[in-house]
Length: 206
Image 1 (spheres, rainbow, N blue to C red):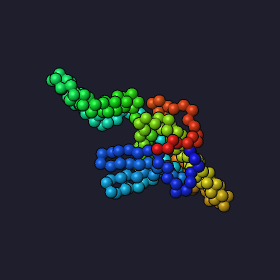
Image 2: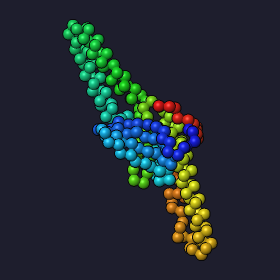
Image 3: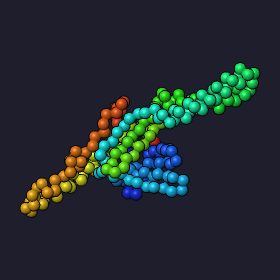
């Protein structure tokens, strides 16, 4: 990824929820989440120095499978009924309608859905990736690296301030670094942990 620029927003993913859409952006000091509900936009942000931990896992996505499977099955049944009923033209038409749903259903079963979940103090961001597996791994490496850098920087600043105050006669335990900053979060092992993650590989354009 390129060096962060203040106030620059890089789109890193999107998700469609029931009734809302979410768009995720990488900014200089964290991750921004735009939740779009018709004509209203609710913007939230997770700062890198507030991230508790980051997870990477895969799932099938039951609502997606149910939706595509239902329509694929309905059109296939109609195709067979029309074929046995002596209407080959109608059977071909319904078969064409069933194809996109069937292909989507099968691809999801094969590749599944990669999800990066960023847990902050108060909110979390779930960033899904359908077929862009490499982009998901690069983003995971970028988020964990920036989180470590931000939290180690704050831990060093607190330690330096504590040292100066201790030298001035204030007890050392008054301003000890919080546990979160002393031990930055590590990315937990995923179901299929990616190997050789690049530390600063550029994200492909959307």
